[in-house]
Each structure stands twice: as C-alpha cells, then as structure tokens.
Image (cartoon, rainbow, N blue to C red; front, side, top):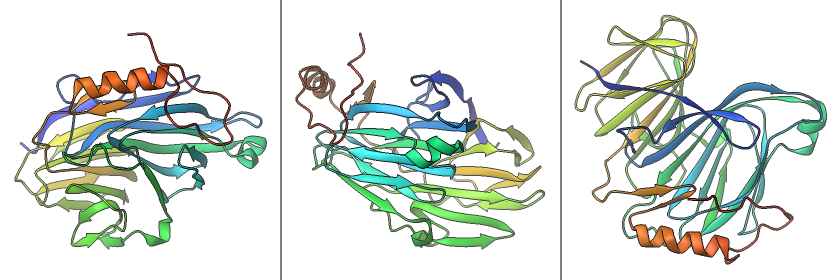
Length: 288
C-alpha cells in the first residue's frame, strides 16, 4: 500500500475567516519538519472586505505562505512589509521570537479579490530554535520550475527531482506545488523519508486509491508513489526527514521545551515581544 494514513482538513475559524486545518492532526503532529498546515480558501472576498489577522507571536518555527490566487500584506516586528502574490514565497523565521500580521492589501480590499493558498509552519531543528528572527521574500520567477510528464512543478522549499529552491532551509525538506492536468501521472521518488500529498483542488489516484480535495495522504516510506489526476488538480507535496527530538505546540508557539513555551506565553502577555511597526492591534493570549 502506498498510503499509510489519510487526514482530512478540518474547518477552523481564525477570526471571521474559515480555513481547513490539516496539521497537527490527531495521531499525527508532523510530516518531516512541517508541524502546521492550513488550506486558505478558495473564496472570493467582496469589495470592502478582507482578511485581517492581527499581530500575534511565534517562536522556534518558520511560517511559509504560498498563494494560488489573491494577495496578502505581511508585516512583522523586524520591520518587514511585503505583499505576496501567487507563486511567491514568504518565509518568516521566528527563532527566539517575532510578531506579525497578515491583511488584505488596500487595493484588493477596495475592489474585492479571490483568495486561495496554503500557510504552513516548519519547526526549527535542534540547535536553531533560538536563532535571530528574520524574513525573506522569494518571487515566483526565482523558484525552480520543471515539467515532468505534463505536470507543472515548482520547488517551493528544499529539494526535489534534483532541483533546489533558493529558500534557505535548516533541515532536509520537500515542498513542491504540482499542477496536474487531467489524466497526467507523476511519480514521486522515495528521496525523503517522510512524504505527504495534499489535494488543494481536484482529485487524484495514488496507486489506485482515490484522494479528494482537502485530503492529505501520508505516503509509505521507501516506495516510489504514482499519482494520477482524475481531473485538473493542484497538489502540494511536502515532507522531509523526521525530527529526532519531539516538538510541542501550543497556540502559535512551537518548541522542544514546554518550559520555553511557558516563557513565551508570559512574554506575550507581558508585552515583551517587539511590536509590529504600523500596527496598533494584537491578538491576546488565549485562555488555557
């Protein structure tokens, strides 16, 4: 069998806007370095409306934003202010602590716009959890692009099919956006120990087993896995090497140490994270 487990995205409200949360899931916290995976949309925002994720904190992870449609404006406490558009990558390293917001840019808010994409988090590996916070933006044209058997592939982060993304990673990583025409077949080699396929749109067969939209399949280790698109489909391939040390997750905090998470909670509640320039709101620490 090529599929070890199927995880279905669960609806979650993130402040007036619904996403489908895939990771963490019951019985499965991580796939490679990926510890969080949200599917945003697809939706159409009416004129005058938009996404407003107020400033909130992170530690010991990197947020990865990738859009299929629409735009978002990222601001953070190291002074970054960057719009992201389809095919671009926003990679924010939290390290010892960062705060950020994500909002619909003013022009898109005024006109109305579609929104569809994936936001994921990768945990920072042992020895790197407390590095300096930072932010990097990579335009779509900078990502490796290849076509295999009619499938259009972009290597978002890490390495796949012998191509490496310019996005700097600290752990062996697989992250690929695959656009698959109807009846196209893609073989995923066993180059990474942990691998998963998430169907963002459409439907695929994985060695004959159907996988519909908003489902993630955890793939069997060590096997070359064949994906075939039943219709035109958009599939996110993700994974990498497993972490030797377990990670804990609470709200927006990830760490190998529960005590470090408790400290981050006290720091956010006490206003000790650096502020986000240009922002005057924030998301309070949730009740336990």
